[in-house]
Amino acid sequence: MKESVLMKNESVNSKICKYCKTEIPKTAKICPNCNKKQGSVLTKIIIAFVVVVVLCLLFGGGSKSKKTDGEINASTTAAPTPEPSVESTAPSVTDAPVVEESTSDTIPTEYKSALNKAIAYSESMHMSKNGLYNQLTSEYGEQFSAEASQYAIDNVGADWNANALAKAEEYNESMHMSKLGLYNQLVSESGEQFTTDEAQYAVDNINADWNANALAKAKDYQDSMSMSPESIRDQLVSEYGEQFTQDEADYAISNLN
Image (spheres, rainbow, N blue to C red):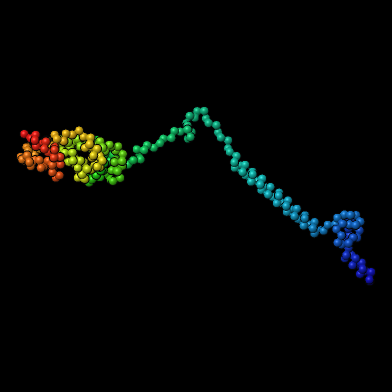
């Protein structure tokens, strides 16, 4: 009985070498008889399981990658482009000439009409910028919209100084005005509405004989209103009258018949 117990304890504390089949200590990692390394079965099972998982991942990923590559190759493989027919002479889209839209086609008809009217007024009546705008928008004039009128003013291409000078010449020939009277008429809101610079340019560049104008105006007063020389003199120099200088008025009175 004692011997059997001892054998049982020995079997518990020992193990059989898997290579030479001799009994060796259970904790021995190398067999002292055959010098073979002893391995745990559980460890081998775990290692084998890990190896299988890794192989599955590798081969599974590879097959998926191959499938994706195949799909990509299939989708990116272009169909063979047919060669152009010899008889075809039509230009490609890239070779076709680009036709630019005419700028004039984008301008509203009212704007173009206002511009044509502005050009006509500027050339025939030598109007100022402000006077022309008012004429285009006035309910008693052309009745264009403010936008169309502004477009016309901005694009009429008028020389406002030249217009002021032309208008001054008209007044000089028909009404024999004084220099100051002519200037005031050009800048007046109820007159021509030129700027002060444009009006000054006109009176500085007009070829007028102010003495002759004073004399012509004096004769008009004498013939049409039968005024005395002194009354005519006062009318010629008055700031509410003709606005000639004193010398110009004296010249006119001294040369009356």
